[in-house]
Length: 117
Image 1 (spheres, rainbow, N blue to C red):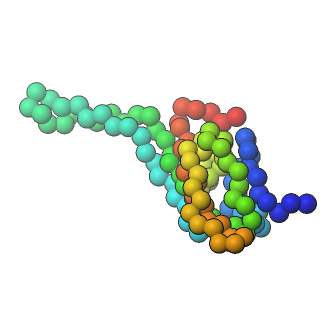
Image 2: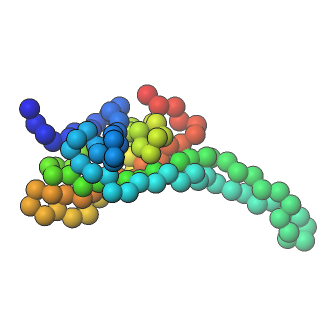
């Protein structure tokens, strides 16, 4: 049995107890930022009289240290991150590797109008 975490498709990233991911790594940080687009509507004098918020999305990320290979995540894979389901992976980054220990970062976005699979 391999001790290498592999996440593809509809699998989820689980933090577990005390920041431990499936017993294979340690989550060192994570965040969940509510974001979207904003349109400011001005009057004839240039003052903002209305604000329209739309295209809501959660931008989530986490950093993790593993003693084996980092999870194989592809752009567009669906994961659960920071308690937000159906996040789409935007990018992954290997931050350092020292022998068999690796630290990596995953950034993902949950769009309000896209339902999870």
